[in-house]
Image (tube, rainbow, N blue to C red; front, side, top):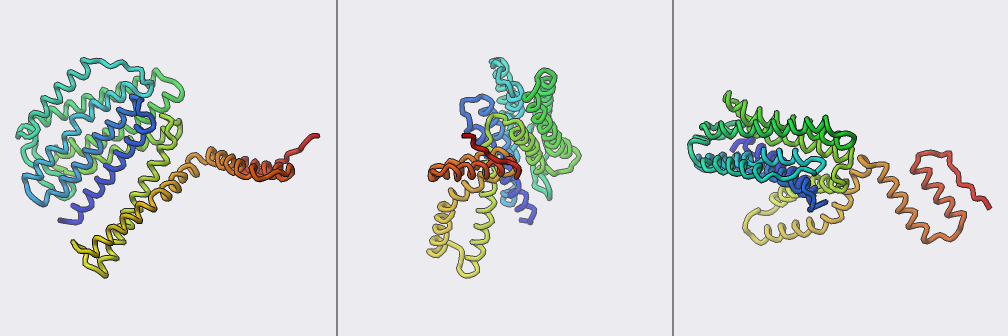
Length: 350
């Protein structure tokens, strides 16, 4: 395998992890909220798309039949993503849309019809991994899928744009940010997944990365408008992402150092090494996570973080102080720090 065939799957796995964690963390904040649940389903479809595409690249070196199978399989999330996106657009952000049975029946029947051709030449005839992409020849069903995806996604964007004229205030700002991210993601996805392959330009692996624009703009909406009341989600998402990078780097370095002195294989020394590596990772995970979760607060929610920290410190120190003058001095010191001024005094009137 070439270096590119290692780099592309790794990139797609990272994208898949980001997509999945984003969905799980937002859903975990309010499991009964329909918006949170649909957003989770949206992220699951994107995560599967990225992960399956990474698998197609990685296992393409084994056999042609496996490459063709995985190429067909990785397109399955594309059957479901448009309808989930449209449903999210309908309920976001007011969550007042009433479910229409005909909406689900029609789309489910159409998706099942398309899926029945998944492993036939009417869908994808051949598939070969080439440098930078997947060279596949498609049939009439794939064209129908493309038309379906484009139509549903355009209608979803139309729903969002229409809401921009109806909503006001914070909700309008939320829709605007999500619409911008969605439009960029859709354009990038269509270019690399449908348009360029039609001209024999294969950079398909860049299509899933385009969805990060949607996630990024939604994250910005969360930060600026406290959408879904999930400030803690931003903290945890960044903590888990940084922890993943740290553990991957430390694991790679540890394994490299181990191979300099021992044989890495099915032997007792390797087993002991892996067990120790696993235990050290488990023991360090919780304290590292708690420390990293406060990092976004220090920058993104800095004012709120300073207020909460000051209140916490005051609460801890006041319990051990009984002298009135010292208590006044402590309050004065903390208030100066919070409002960032030296011109503040507390006068006690008897």
